[in-house]
Image 1 (cartoon, rainbow, N blue to C red):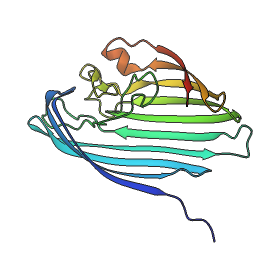
Image 2: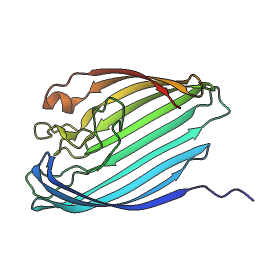
Image 3: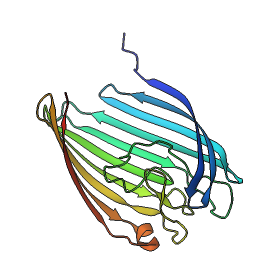
Length: 231
């Protein structure tokens, strides 16, 4: 008898209040309710992680209606050299449709991890579309190299871009361009022994039309490395 598909699921609700929330539309009190569902499977060769969430509530005198859909799908080819995992992330979060209307459609990720898309944290998960193909190579039992290239667009051209803390980084009021930019990245992780691991990351952000039209639009180079010791 074939083994059952090991798909797991979560259903959840989150309530959130901010007495002085800021978006491209302006600042006001924010009360937000979030209902979401997550489906995932970790077993190889096919793994996936899908999440869907809807938000409603109030922002000042307006009503909130926002949403997101996120996916991470991978296939591990154990029969190929270096046992690569080929992955594809595709995510979208809603943005505000009209900054002059009191209703708000900007998605709020609430409590995202600090390095949501990459360690440099240039773009946060609000008003965006991203497509991120990747491949992970296991060159040795204790050495992995990950290469990926993330592409970013604005979901709404009437809204700006935000950082990981949902703080407005660039207003969308001075440009109608949708494409924000892209970022190729390489990460190397070496587990030296049971207690010690080394990580090195290099990324280069290529600024797109929206950033160039709405203010300084220079490319960004980023490099970081660290050592972890586990007791």
